[in-house]
Amino acid sequence: MKQPLAYRMRPETLSDILGQNHILGQDKFLTKMIENQTISSMIFFGPPGTGKTTLAMVIAKVLQQPYECLNAVTCNKKDLEGIIIGAKLHENLIVIIDEVHRLNKDKQDILLPYLESGTLTLLGATTANPYHAINNAIRSRCHLVEIKPLQMEDIKTAIQRALMSPKGLNQQYTITNDAMDCLARLCGGDLRFALNKLEIAAYNTGKENCITLENIQNVCQKANTTLDKDEDGHYDAVSALQKSIRGSDVDAALYYLARLVAYEDLDSIERRLLVTAYEDVGLANPNAVDRTFHAIQTAKTVGFPEAIIPLGFAVCDLALSPKSKSSCKAIQKAVALVNEQHFPMPEYLKLTPVGLNKEDQYDYDHPEIWNKIQYLPTLIKDMKFYEPNFNSGPYELSLIKNYQQLQKIQRTNHLKDLKKKP
Image (cartoon, rainbow, N blue to C red):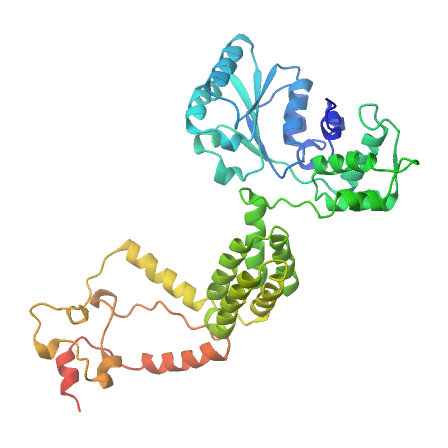
């Protein structure tokens, strides 16, 4: 069976590797390590198709050190035990593990003492954020190295190499400039994606063997993204959506909404928009909060593709709305205090106070004294959780006016005295 073009074109030397100048440029740390014929355990993390595993293999070849390749998903304890035996027999064995974040604890326990002693060197590759997905024990024994998406010019260089190389398409095909630009743009920095689409497009050309823009558009109808729900690209887009709304950048917010819409990820959109509405807009524009809820319900009712209409409405509404985090900050401050220390509440606030004289009990029939009663525990009776946001919208400003009036009232826990006043 013929191997895919992306596999056949895997770099074999450092000079073949495109991009990554931040680690492989002149005088950069990885370049220096290789020049000094040394390497440490590292975890390469970054988007798919950026050459993480390939880089690890090239390093092992350049250093002329023995290496073994494993996939954390499919390898078992027996595989790892075999690796350990090999490491003891062969000095400087490099173990390359794909999807290293999926290495479960039992397997990690097998590797840890040999990583610690330097019996083997681990070069891991992962698309996940290692600060979240990699076990602390592994992470503390490895350098974390980010592998960045390739730029369009890097992708174009790789396409040209693939067209010319005997291992690739062997000069049997050509490509128009607009087709190359389109493919480089649509691949999203994923070289594997670009080369796989290039190969399919090549096999669908006419007699001239020229890959055209139409060929590329036929085999690549949607831009490649990294919005796998189990990977960081998805969470990054969700995060960027909220930050853009918070920053009142309606165009950016619509863009990140569109990235989530591309995968019809209504669940994540629903959660993030509702949280954003209450957290970032909040009291500045409660009507926008309500409209967001109804827009999401409408989106769920009509489904995709029409769901983009109410979702777009909600995002524009929230992004262009005045913002206030005052209610969010207030409850967070209260929760933090509750988690730190317990304060006994006043007896008269309890549902059924025991041993309290009637004149000291809460009176349900005298609303005129309710706003004069002390409700906070005595030890924190002057604590303030809500901080007015004077840059908010008209609604919260009206609340602030009422709040300021309430602050002028001297509250008391002597209910008996309150009841005596006319």
